[in-house]
Image (cartoon, rainbow over all chains, first blue to last red; front, top):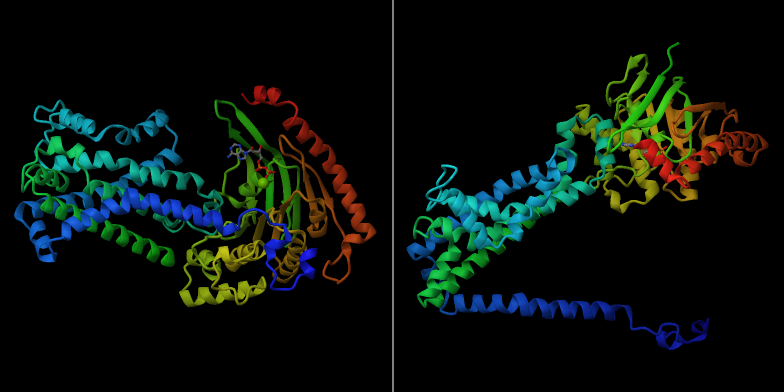
Amino acid sequence: MTTIEKPADAPALASGRRTGPPAWAGTALGVGTATIFLSAVVLIPLGAVLWKGTAQGPAAFWDAITTPDAWAALKLTVIASLLVALINLVMGTLIAWVLVRDSFPGKGLIDLLIDLPFALPTIVAGLVLLALYGADSPLGVSLAYTRAGVVVALLFVTLPFVVRTVQPVLLELDREMEAAAASLGAGPWTIFRRIILPNLVPAMLAGTALAFTRAIAEFGSTVLISGNVPFKTQVAAVHIFGQIESDNTEAAAATSTALLVLSLVFLLAIDLVRRWGSRHG
Amino acid sequence: MTPKISLTGVGKTFPVRGGGEFTALSGIDLDVAEGEFLVVVGPSGCGKSTLLDLIGGLTRPTTGRIAIDGAEVTGPALDRAVVFQQYALFPWRTALRNVEFGLEAKGLRRRERAEIARDHLDLVGLSGFEDRYPHELSGGMKQRVAIARSLAYDPGVLLMDEPFAALDAQTRDSLQDELLGIWAKTGKTVVFITHGIDEAVYLGGRVAVLTSRPGRVKEVADIDLGSRDAREDVRSSPEFAAHRHRVWSLLKDEVQTAQRLTVPAPRKEAIHLG
Ligand SMILES: Nc1ncnc2c1ncn2[C@@H]1O[C@H](COP(=O)(O)OP(=O)(O)O)[C@@H](O)[C@H]1O
Ligand SMILES: [Mg+2]
């Protein structure tokens, strides 16, 4: 009540009713901490790579990433990762759908197995794949030293991303919305396309983005099965490792920068698609 | 004359996890005449939504027969519309595009769709809100959009599942009056579900009281309060109080039964269901 008698310009806090810090203080502290943490863990190392990769100027950077072996490694990495991201988009959504909407024996086990590629150290995944699809494959399918082997390895390690981003959205999906659509004359296919898909697309895209960015940087799972044949099966991450081994840090940094830029471009493209989708859903 | 909606011996059981069955509805006989406003009341969990889903064709009955205009219901169709408690609007579509959804299934041209949708938004008092998204609308406005969406493709039957339960009292009162106005204007057959006695008596021409576990029709009470659109306070008239008391007495035992079944004896129920 005392505040009413105070002149308008008196500080509001003087009334003594608010003793804690102002509301924005918590926010500022949060933002500050997050920024410092992000800088230390992400931004500074990224900056160092960028600086190292481009310190010699754009021409030197371009030369470093267009040497035949670097270029071949980058090309293979991008094409294989795009392919893997696309397959994951479809198969991951399908698996999430089956896990949420269908019931069948062994469902719980499959649900557990989905996380295995995350839980397994990637080099172990590489070993497993080599044992399965290596030169003396028990399945009779040898993918050792082939690009198909690279794709299979990438598929294995990136499988959980789309499944695990789509699954919770599907679980939370308002079933009444589907019932409403059905009562409004929509058939099963229309309901899937016009009701379920618009709800899932953001999660599908987010999962795909994660799968792609993980795939272009993948090392452990591909290094064994690919055999690292330059110009054929050597992926970018392994190429970078090789450059470091031979003391060519500038070239390694340049290729790393290229991967970084590719990741960012892909993430940006995905975000654009998502924005476009939310306006035209 | 064949009734608009007719239910004969309708029952619905759900499989229970771990085996066994749960009987939600049993032996429902109910006829609804063309142009009637029927309200169904019952305690929570007695199977009201299940009943509405059955009439809407969203689920199939385990026993019995449901017919609209004498023809058996085999699935959802555009002769019936359902309005849900939580609106079930499509959040990525504007109000206008939400209302257009059923018209798209009907295969109308874009121009025609927009025109019909506009008219129906106008009917529910939402002219000028065509381009708003659901998250930009209040609860009452969302339910108006949902009602407009249901009416837009001109179904003969309007099925409403506790449509005003989530709204504040004032919004609910005005939407009840508007609904009666729309009903008078369009002559739809309405089946309106509620757990509110006042709402049931105020809206219904007849009020069907459901028992719980399993849900059966206990009694159908006739409500003759005359026209509600006279600008007087029908709710405080002695006739209203009498009808209210009648429905209340019918419901009281059921609510107690429902509570006895749910609250103090979970063990016994678990044995029953398992
Ligand atoms: N799909 C279902 N599977 C199993 N039980 C259900 C299902 N739908 C409803 N029930 C059960 O049927 C009973 C009636 O549910 P409902 O029709 O939603 O009641 P109300 O709308 O009257 O509150 C409840 O006990 C509920 O648990
Ligand atoms: Mg209900």
